[in-house]
Image (cartoon, rainbow, N blue to C red; front, top):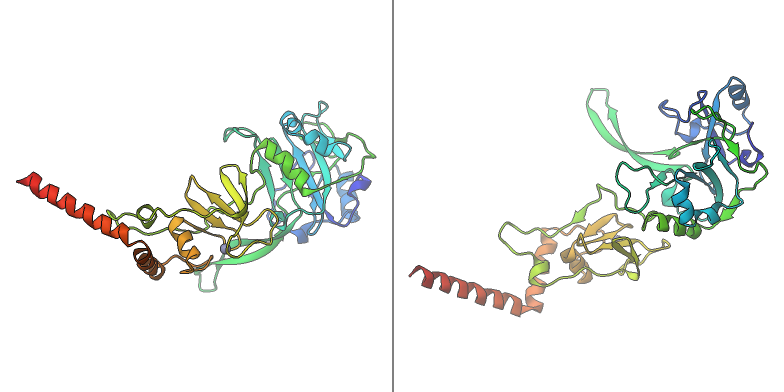
Length: 343
Ligand SMILES: [Zn+2]
């Protein structure tokens, strides 16, 4: 019923209704509601015709790959990545299947999540070629709380959850087929995180890079309407990270001021968007903000506020007096031309 490969303490099970792949009951994804592999509830549930789902528990090293378009996955080198490891499928052509891998160095930022990887150039309605289910972990979440007086407050809480579960081998798929292993005695193969990243990068560049959260602040220089930006006037540029490497449309690497302890660095520079983003401080800067950090007016992580801006202007005018002098000259010439034009 439960293959021996899954009889381990770092796997938690979910009781699924017969012929179903998922659960919608609130709280099913919380680790405290997961069921250990030796729990008698599991066999009762299966005997009654139910399906089992599972996911890696916190601090597990198990990775679950849900291969949805095997052609794309295999062309990217995925066939070698999962060759010989434990796999199972509910489809006789095995065009879709699940593969289990042992990976000791999964970055912790993925704990509690799953990710979908679409082929490079795929449209928004196209299915993902691959989904990866990571070990459960603590995730910070914004929840709304109702106080005794009826007012609502938003609170940041930490929950330990799984990013997703998959149906276990031998479960009955909604299509009526049973999920069967390719080789029931195959072990779960160890791989390194780099090997996983390599395949995913070929499916879509930068697929597994840490993404800038949509709500993360980007400090931008403020310019009232009609005033030119400092970055244009003084030709301020973004700074490249240390140990730079290209990644999709960005350049990734380590923070040049406070360094990085994460493999692969903690900075993403997007020249197209004109943003330098620091993942340690979860904050982005435009070229003016970057120049202010470079000058020590602010530190990485600080806001580029009005006081910082004022000091920055003073320093730039002191260091490049010609810029302002030329602007004043140009302004005078323009005024003169206007006067002459009006005559
Ligand atoms: Zn920083």
